[in-house]
Length: 252
Image 1 (cartoon, rainbow, N blue to C red):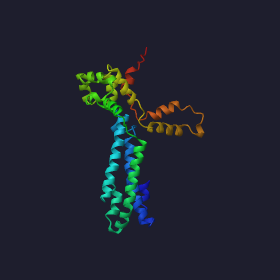
Image 2 (tube, one colour; image 1 turned 60 degrees about the vertical axis):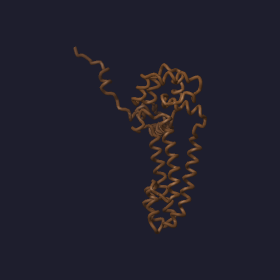
Image 3 (cartoon, rainbow, N blue to C red; image 1 turned 45 degrees about the horizontal axis):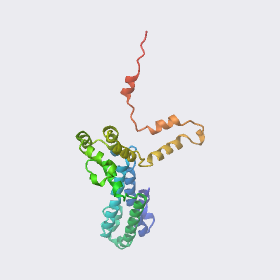
Image 4 (tube, rainbow, N blue to C red; image 1 turned 90 degrees about the horizontal axis):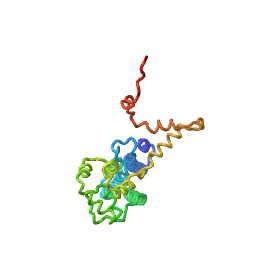
């Protein structure tokens, strides 16, 4: 939407507004990219690994990018904001761009502050060590962990079968559910974190489908089966397996 509005910038005849709009086009492009990365549904890159740790990494990376962009803007490097860069390269807008520069820096600082407030990081060293154990139990320092799981971690770290499976690239959910089943305390901690709903995107998608299916004209409709089809549209049916289970009818 902002890109389309930006295409009409010449109609505004206000250089300051044009530059501010150019910055909004770029920053919203970055935010939209982050938003797509956090959508587990129909995101092939996150398929089978859309847990809370993956999304935390994406958010942490974006906050680090904000810090990087602040430093670059302070050095009048607008490479991360290509639309804004077109004005900075134009000598006719150089004075106005320098004036807007501080506004951009201030906004990036405020954006980072808001992300940090809304997605706080764990400050408890012990809790962070437990989370590291879930993500990679073979690389943690046992002495940093709570006493009640230290011995199990030692046993797991020396379990060659589990280690080979983990290093083969199996996702965390399958590892803790199917492979590390004999390590009860560690498995309980892992599943307690991995079952957390990482995002609300699927809920929002479900409600959007329900509003389309069950509206004022069809307010008495039982939408159960329709919703099942709408929410499973991304799942490919196992036709061969379904056919094999069918019993052939013989003619007499």
